[in-house]
Length: 572
Image (cartoon, rainbow, N blue to C red; front, side, top):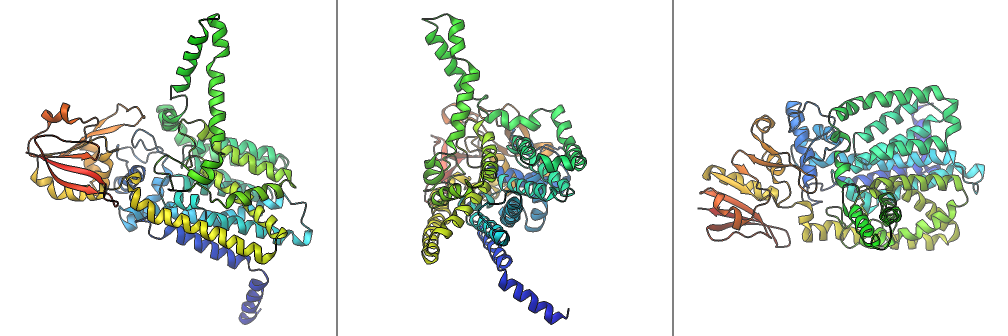
């Protein structure tokens, strides 16, 4: 075919099938919303982001993390043993952009953007296996493409997905691998070689986020149940894919045998079984009822198994509470978007009509609901609920249901009314989110993101040569990691000079006591510790802490709203 004829054919094809062009526009929109101004929004780098960034920098420079571990399969970090893959993904961007917000956040933003396009292809594959009974054969392709495009669009403008993709908090990267795994698994039902990609993606998910270590096996069980027949037809390929995944997990398994916290360290400190509230409540009930009945009978009615089961179920359904989803959102910093839930208010309409439409295809509805339930399970086992970061995978089944809701309403309503209503509802919702995220959050809640450390260490760098010691209160998060990051401390010096305290605090975190001239007293109190401060030194306290006589206030680090982040005192 002549070159000119090929061009005309492509143009005619694009006009008759506008989906590819629209998908490109949706992905470009997603990219703009996730990548632009990464160094300003969120307003500062959170401690977990800084930890990953510095360890990526350390591995790039020396091949070892801040603890001197060679190419670790789990990062000890603050004693929370972070999965390593997001950190490794930062190495190229830090090498290009430097040790800053762009270097740290760009991998998450890029993979968050790619997830939008990936969801289109995932939904397209999904609908080939769960065909809607209401569509005619001639309409199936257009219908499937339409639902897939709606799904991608709703994910592109999702406040929840935008916020998580713009920060390096593990979960956006993890969601990419889960979507890649499900898409390639579905492709593998017809072309089994794709299962190798699925196996690889699931392993990458395990190396990316804590919660996926529970989600992945549950997801595999669900996929096996829903698609058992095609799996059995190609059981040899399935076994090879399983062996591939197992081999790739061997480094983590070996590390776990040597140090169990490598795999479950973080889970142990955030699980409901670590929190003693339920166990103590059971003991109180046994003691109260034991007065009027035999102790064994009291223990039968008030036992830990029942109490923990009830608590897990309660926490599971907290994630489906309407106030959490649509009004107040996650109340744990830094995962809050002020003034709104994790979903837009308008989403509730599409979810209702989507569930109504999907009731015509019970198998697809069951698959989406099982996927949604699986994503909530890890968070339901923790004592901080509801948690938007731990249930982030829920966003994909939700946008798919919303896509069916849009299709349902499009068939019921006048087209002009449908499009104008959709534009008004989502235009106003997105404008409200944009104001809260890009205006209110940096101005009013910069403290959620550990704002002030960059300014603090920039100032302290100018004072180091003039003082003997610099004390930074341990009440201020984990201040040592910000020093290493913002002053780009040579990793070789960290390995030899840093003094660590491996005794975990009540939250399970480990701390650093000293590095060079810097000391980080964990529980500093002026009345108790003032006599231990060296003369000609600096003392850095948070706003809630006060220094008394003998300390001269020389500088304040200020939040954007005028509140004090840090007070710097001179000890004469």
